[in-house]
Length: 367
Image 1: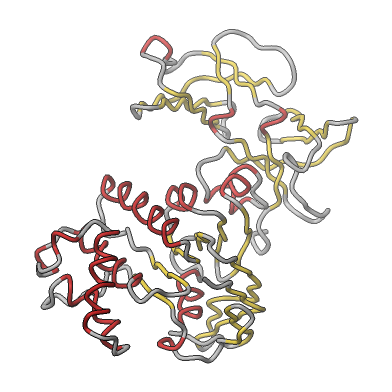
Image 2 (image 1 turned 60 degrees about the vertical axis):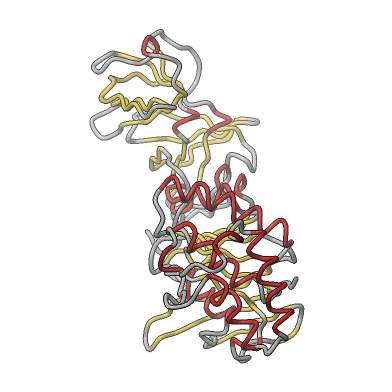
């Protein structure tokens, strides 16, 4: 296993800055995910760790050893590509054994290690089959086995599940995580899929436009986003512009012109992100925190509105409520049966709990 230390990394392609000023430490045995939209710099960062790109500025270190300009084959990393990059004319055994043969291991050692890793990825019965005869999920496992058989210090995965259907992605998420825990290997995973990141990762780095906006555990990223980009990209949220008004003990009061009223927020790090006086502020409330009822509710942060849309997804029900001409709020509840569903056009009351509101600034450069 290795730690990975990225120190002030910048990568430029001509006039384009793909990654800017990245400082990051990935711990031994950690499942660490780079998450962000297309073109945000996550794959470029992974390729700098693999050695396919060298940074324009900064250093890449494995266990305090400078690897910045070391060639890929000397880094002892295992890479799983988005398109698997398997040899279609070879058998499963030959594909998995390829890296070991390049390292000139004895035939007996090659056979033993290939059989061992195929057993772990549950492909031992397919050892002599052509990879072109395998399903997508089986091909993905061959790619994983090929990366793991060389016993790398670091496993790198570049959107490995993007070509699979939804059900198979669910299965492979569990499979990858099982293998990572079994091998206890430092793993860096690139994806734009928030569910993959939240369900698999020890920690997540959220990227956009070449910059890393936040690093944290899945619960920290989801519950305590540092700005509006992170709040909107991770899961769903109701996001409204807001202005600080005054402080009253353990409560901050913010004015919302869009809601035509003041919003009360618990004064804590959990509820209020760091910001300065020049920042545009937003109120973020996750749909599962929004409470909707046909009966009147008392207290702060109670709004009235009209049900505009009810969306049934099976396990949950989304209720979209129009509050003002410019504001709709989304509420999500677990499906408790048809009798609990709101009716379109119903007049309802919406409650935003003070402890479930997060005040965040706009991401730098947005305003």
